[in-house]
Length: 102
Image (cartoon, rainbow, N blue to C red; front, side, top):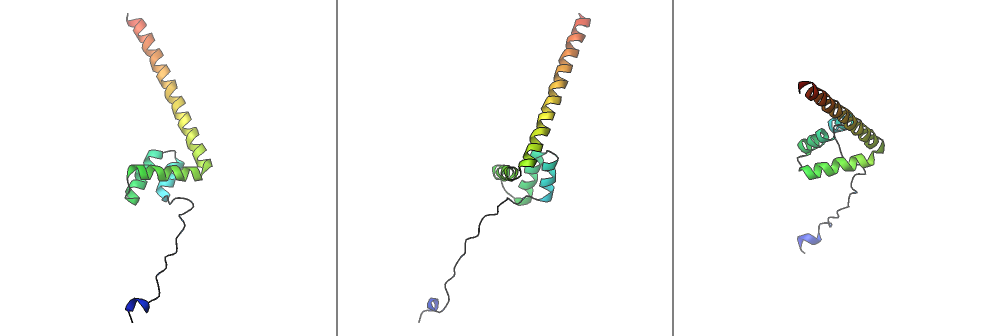
């Protein structure tokens, strides 16, 4: 009798992928602060994956957390608005300075 007939067959049960991707506490904290790039770097280092995989993981996590995604979008919009104000201030100041120097 062959040995393989004595052993029960190995049955692999498929495991469902996690509903939400696994993101470490440090990456989640970085996301709460609005630091998406830092979160991607942390995921890359912790899980030893490439940039695209880490970016996809963070994007999937953010899609599963709509309140966090909205908070990050608002923080980025505020940052762009502040940058635009500084740019206008510097251009106006440069124009005034150029006027007085000529």
